[in-house]
Image (tube, rainbow, N blue to C red; front, side, top):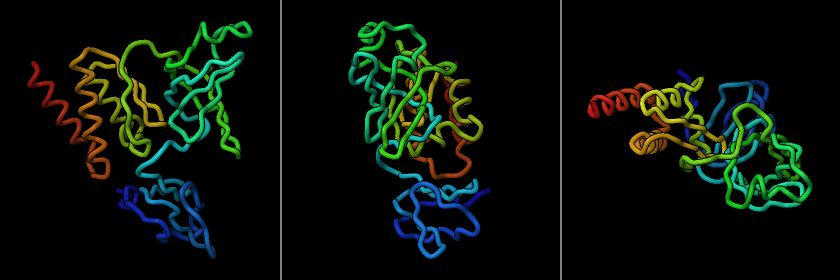
Length: 226
């Protein structure tokens, strides 16, 4: 097991040498050595050493799936809050509908929620998102739940293992945005069970064997209901 995968690090903590790994998000390099730039959890299970923030807003990356809330409908685009430092732009060319100029409000209006994908992040942090991909659409019904963006990988689990368990034992439809927003739809008991379990995963996100522990809890819950 990769023991250092969920180790908490503090700013300026030494993480490794650039001859062995590349410096990723939340790090800086000095004299060939990689250091933590922020307080967070170290993740070095690829060619990069990244530090994922424990707290704070979502740091957007291209191709991330996100849940956005429309802030404003303009003539040919929308401004969307994706829990980042800046709002994202959704252009009419990036939605599945054929929209006449000036008629954006007929399709998406202030307060509407959408499932989207980050299309572009430029150096000035200008964000663009798209709805042109599989299973992306305007959200109708259900419930949006907020978590720390840094906890999202644990909620999804390795190869989607944790989210598969939640869907199996709660019979809910669940969409997890990398930006820390989760959409849940199902019956009232199922939704409550998902929220309770996600809170448990957040609280214990640094512990090992969490997937098995959560499965045991969900099994026990299901037996008690029947």
